[in-house]
Image (cartoon, rainbow, N blue to C red):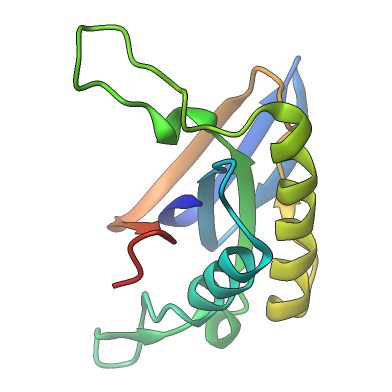
Length: 150
């Protein structure tokens, strides 16, 4: 499972001119799911995300987590995070889970994030063509891959 986490002052997702999810301060998370992802990956990643201290304290140091700033999460599925571009110019997405496998994992991730954060998570629409708007705060962008837990 791969997550690209962006600290935002606001973000939203629109599908067919309808806003499906929006947040003010918090994290916009683009998430890519592999066929080999497990519940252990999902739980580890959710706890890691919710615990990330990426918000400034009174001294301007990134010492505060989402709960400290009452931040939100906007979760957007994005299979292209698993693009392999070693050969040629057209990326391969062979490592990305097929929709019938990825969708249940994505739904579980929403529930896990909500449980760990203690409030609802805003989302895009799985499998839809989405327009994502954000104001990246900092900018602060973090890449996490559960296959490489550093």
